[in-house]
Image (cartoon, rainbow, N blue to C red):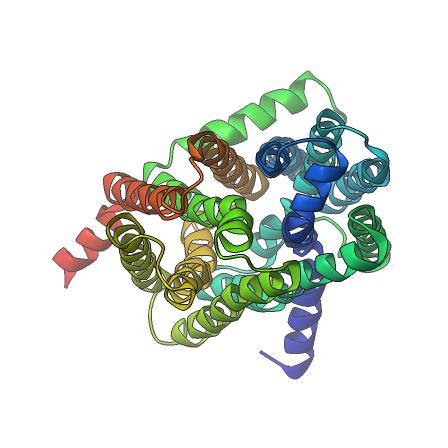
Length: 406
């Protein structure tokens, strides 16, 4: 690869990372403000926590629509439309006066955000293959990690100086800036634009059918969805566990949350380095094993030892959440490697299943809440075990066939 090609690849990665960062900013920035939002809206904190699950469901719907449309209407067109919907909904959020209004506009915001960000993996798949695609995903992941690292601290500061409403003002301004950048710099779509008619809908359906006819790919799909769900359980319950049970302030919570991102960044670097020497699927196995060990240890400690020292629980959660850096890029590369022409549809299925399962498990977590610390590690452990089971059920031949060949 020439120096010019490398520079172009890094510029594309930075631009796509800025787009991807819309999601972690949307999810993480308002976590420190949840208690204040509940008080302002006259609701219980767990009603406000449900806005996270609603947001994730909205992302799933947006990705389902946006991915398929991007295959036939172009990545750029769908991305800009999705960001326009996101910005419009975000403008309404500072003015909501009830939990119902919060849930409604968070859902609309998520649909737009899902439509925009689902195109990222398809853009990578349009231009890169195999190990190079995995390296591109890892590079985007490394850059994107700055968003969840900064988001809780930004949220805590904005809450202090402008109230919780200032957080959504920030999100709207950021998304509008990203839209302006993409309008000027996003590469032209490689797909020919088509009219929205019956033939278009038929082709969209055919793309989705081809995705579900790849059973080995489904193992990677479910694995990523459920490992991501384990992290969503942490996002849903961590503000309660850290701030209510361990009595952390909003800034302390932001710092504790940021520790997870440092671990994730480290594992992302491990992925980028290891891909030079081994296959993505082997790195994936290491990540899942680490997540399983940490979630099991946290669950056993909480169940049989009461509330453990905060440093112990923090360390286990740092590694568990951090394993996303070993799992996401490698799972995505393995999954997307089965698809070429229907890359947008395939990524839409991945995003829809991932966010639908995560939203459901996050919602079940709020329903299972009993005021103890047991729910968080218990639901995280259940998600990881399910991920391993489905990966083995659908995709074990990827490893077994290699073993027979050897």
